[in-house]
Image (cartoon, rainbow, N blue to C red):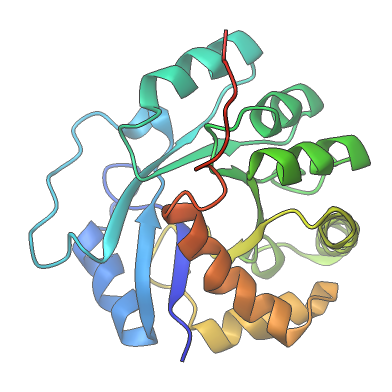
Length: 227
């Protein structure tokens, strides 16, 4: 049985939900691990994880900014200090800056919260080159309605097409902000089929790829000087 991971979970202090509650439900659903990727502006006051869950819950951060210069500063600040460094994308300039930087692990919300942005051939090629995983947030489908959902599904299909073409790493995640947002792996795999992801691709995006992201599998031989 594959080891499943959800690399986009939000908990206290960004939400009212303690990390322990997210851990309890995720473990019940059969996950091997989750990453708490609270946005960087909510990281103050974070609590130390109890030893009993420290091997299951990975500390991450999701950088959120509209400024490329600030993004670069924050990447430098967090790089090497968290298990998972994610960037909240959406705009073309932030997407490009994130995907061109090998220190970034995942690009969350690459098309924004409601599918208003987009990826391009050039950007996904950067993702493949630098080992930055494109995050397909499945709760964006669940929590959207009508025209927004149709637009999000279309964008995900287009992103999937580009990911396949350039063999860029891709993960599926819940972007959970409560225990009710967490979904069992079989539900995640079923939701991914709505935008055309095959079962074996979805299993890979929920197991081998996120595990490789945490292990920095695609970063080991990267030699890039960041100025």
